[in-house]
Structures are given as C-alpha cells and as structure tokens.
Length: 173
Image: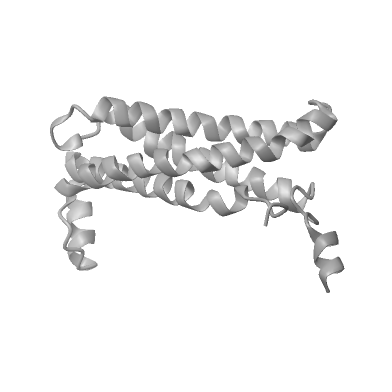
C-alpha cells in the first residue's frame, strides 16, 4: 500500500465541494438578482426542487468548510508525490512544471475558499456578496477543473504514479 499513489484518492472530495459551493453561490445570486430571480423560480418550480434558495448560502458556507477540510490531505499528498520529481528534475522538465502549475492553481482555489469562509462566517445567514460569488463560482470552479485537467495530464501524459509497486506485485505472484 505504501507504493500506491495517495494523491489521486484524496482529490475527489475537494473538487466536488468546490463545484458545489460555486453552483450554490451562483444560484443564490441569480435568485436574488431581479433580472434572473424569475427564471430561477420558474426553473425550480418546473424541476420540482423544494429547497428554498434562501438556504443556499448556509449550504455553500458549509460546503466551503468541507472544501477546506478535504483539501488538506489532497495538498499534503500532492506535495509529497511531487517532491521526488522536483528533486530529480528541478524545474527543468515539463512534468515538474506541470506539477507546479497544478499545485499553484489548486492553492489559489484553497486560499479563495479560506477567504470566503473567513469573510462569510460573520454574515447573518452566511450570505455571500458578489466578491464571494466571483471567487467561488467564476474563479474557483474553472480553476479547479483546469487543475484537475493538469493532474490528469501528469498521470496520462507524463506517467506520474504509473508503475509504482508493480515489481512487488509481480514478485508475490
């Protein structure tokens, strides 16, 4: 089990919670903006969604907390798995450069989540302002998906984590 890469197993929850936070914040903003409130209400009625949009700020606040908590193991395991590449290649290889870019983009989204949590914790009902929505929906969601794309590139194009432990598996058979 020690030879198996841990980072891929830890990234799914922070990605999902980041996406959920962005969607909830964007829907809440759309539901309170006069130009789009009617469309949101109609869509919810048509889709028979019974959750009041006034509850979305609370849900997104707690999904932000879950983003932060689940990001801890993802960041730690990612850093541990990138270290040998940086030690071996420095910043001279595309693999190392992609790994650093992947990490930096994810760090930006984690700092954005931390900022949103910090600012919203004192707001009545955890209501986001337009800056919070811009960070969670406009910045964090696309950045997280791009970082996930880079993570896939590290695995599928550069072979990061591929073949680890295969010699032990062959010896035991």
